[in-house]
Length: 369
Image (cartoon, rainbow, N blue to C red):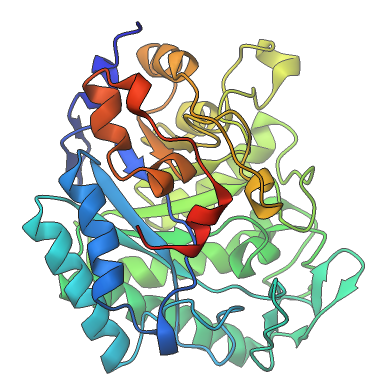
C-alpha cells in the first residue's frame, strides 16, 4: 500500500497555513432555499471539517447582480439573510477545527440545466458560446457594478471570519467568458485578440477584491482551460500564452491558483515534456512560482461528467496523486465527488482504510449528507 504521508503534511504559504494538503473542492449543491444557506448546509460542511479535510471551499455562492445565478437553489453571498446563513456555516466549521473559504461566483450566460431563467443575464458579448447567442453585451456600467459586487463579497467574507476566499474564474462562467475568445468579442479595453487583453476584467475583479480585504488576506482563484460549452477549449496553447493569462491575475493580487482539469493526471503540454509531463497546476506553479491546487477526478474511476449523466463511479487508488505530490508538481489537491459521497474520505485515506471507501453514486447529488 502506498504511503499517503505527503498528503497530510502541513501546508504554509505567506498568507495561509493548513494542517494538510487535502482541499474540499467547490461543488454546486443547489440546496439553499431563497439563496440562504441553513443548518443543513452548515452541518454538511462541518462533517468534512471533523474528518481531516485541510481546507473547505464552499459551493459557488453568487454576487449581488440581478441574474448572477442560473439555478434557484444556489446561495447568495449578499443580503442580510444569506450572510447570516454563511455566518452559521463558518462558525460550525471553525467549531470543528476546520478552515474554509467561500467560492465567489457569477454564472454569466451559462444556462440552467432545469430551465430556470434568472432574467437579463450578464455576458461579455451577448454569447454563451461561439455560436450561442445569450443575453446582451455588458455595458461599462454593468462591468463596473459587477466588479464592485465582487469586492463587497470579498469584504463580507473577511468580516464573517472566513480564512480565505476563492474567485470562480473557470468552467465557462462569467469571468471565464471574458477570458475566452469564443465568447469575448469586445472591441473595448475588456476585449482583444490576446489572452492578456481579455484577462483585464478578471484582473480588475481581483484588484478590487484585494483592496477590499487588505494585503494579508489570502485570495485563491479557480481557472480552467475547458468550458462546459466546449470540453476541448483552450485559452493557452503554449506556456507563453499561459504566462500572458496568469501574470495579470497574479499581479492584481491572487495568492494561490486552483487549476481545474477533468483528469488531474493528464499533462498540459505533452508535446513539451511528454505523457508524464506537468499538469495544469504544475505548469501554473512553474510559470508563476505561486502555490497551486490541482483537481480532477481524484479518488474515482471516471471523471465528473459521468455524474451529470446519472452514472456511478467506483473508488480508485491514489498512487498517481501521491507520486505527483512527492515530486513537488503542485502543493494542494482538491477532492470533489469522493468527498461529497463520503465525509470521511480524507480520514480513511490517512488511516489506510481503503477498503472502507465509498463509491460515488449520482444519487448523492440530491442530498446534503
